[in-house]
Length: 472
Image 1 (cartoon, rainbow, N blue to C red):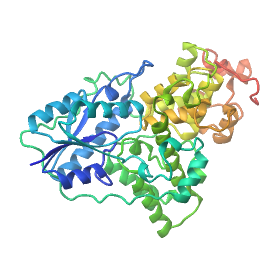
Image 2 (cartoon, rainbow, N blue to C red; image 1 turned 30 degrees about the horizontal axis):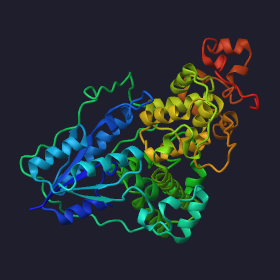
Image 3 (tube, rainbow, N blue to C red; image 1 turned 90 degrees about the vertical axis):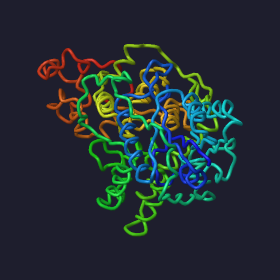
Image 4 (cartoon, rainbow, N blue to C red; image 1 turned 60 degrees about the vertical axis):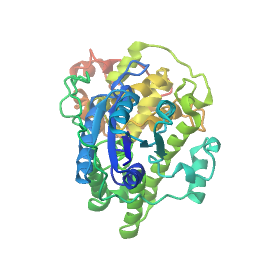
């Protein structure tokens, strides 16, 4: 009678889960395990939590949903807090585990954890690792990972021409049972994890709920009920509302849905409803996500260095006051502050917002981009190690951007994408009475107007930074 551990991490689903499908077919007993270790509950070297409140809630919801799915298949989810190696050693000894089955991850620390696990437990147990987080399987790329192009467009053209997407893995209708007398455990309280709510109530922005069930409901809504997918390329740069973009990122980050599932549902949409630039663009974004995962595999720890994969030396001025103003959304630049306040409240920020606040921190304020990436790691509900750090390095000019001088003029961006100031007014009610002409540059109003609107003692009377080339 063979027993295996099925190690869940960022693959919290039963649909299109290769590790689960293969383990179900091979073993007599299966122990699905999720470990809350320091990579989730601890702090980074930059002084921030690895996981903030919003994402921790999302993870808890995702695990509860996964447990219900596993129960329906005759199993359940074992939750443990602590180091995976220690947890697995105990399970191996108590239940005679002979194998550990899991999906490999992209981050350097995550890969090192896997390697350490293999070194510590082999040959006592067999390890079976699979690739389950990307659209294109690593083994199907038309080049070795060491030859991954350093420009996304080159990568995209190659995989579009010579790559192929594997079919989804069939869902099993029955799982091997848990061993007798094993305790499944429960998710710790936020208090025991020392995560403070800091007065946060229900966010007034995007509220994302975790779990595979919700992810599939969202796909059904965005694709087939509302048919908003047909407008994706046109609306994706908007800032307010649910349906201007797919919002799949959080479920993808925790693996509540696979990119292959999304891909084949797009193809179904194209066949049954319409095929246009928007349907292509969603797949295009999945390829971007793939690309950052492969970049993380190619470059490893270099991705997290201040000089990035390009080994550049960006100009950096250490100023805790400026950095804290950015974090809290108190820079005096309304468009920046509104985006940061949305992040702090809801754990979400639009793609357009992320590019602007990252550029502002790295290019305008000249702060170490890695602190921004680490703050995002704490705050984002959809944090993904490869996408987050890859995008930050890209914007900071030390990543895969082929341009050396890419710069976001945040005032131009604000006027382009929040022309009437609706987004700013939503997140900064103090500015709600300003006109569309005033909303993005309140410091340019007359002293009387600034005083009349109660802005004299706020950053909006004098922002922390003004670029001499901004068109005011």
